[in-house]
Image (cartoon, rainbow, N blue to C red; front, side):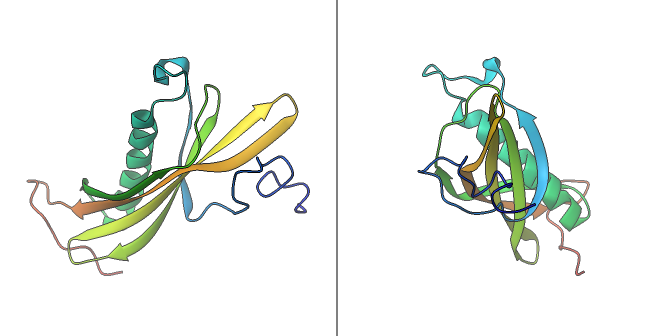
Length: 145
């Protein structure tokens, strides 16, 4: 696939969107539905945040080899709105591993199709901190891979 064939960084990307590729591994994809709208007609930021937390949790669970819980959201930035019908894709990149926790940078990208035209661009990103848990809910050491 050539750059002109790729929807990311192509002429189909809005002028205001940065020309970049998603960072990390794809963890979740979800279609934005009418039930996810806020009063302004855009997809509610809380729904987007929930999808990002789910994606981060899946990645954290795999990396921690077991149960995890979200303990902090240390950075969050909404770049562009999400609309009904957009396919939201969350990409996760483990950026820090501590003794009992890990930080995951989550990027949310949309695939927006208008007829034959496909646009792909980043809409949101944030840093999520997860802690590894024992079955009784207490902290445990992260596995050393």
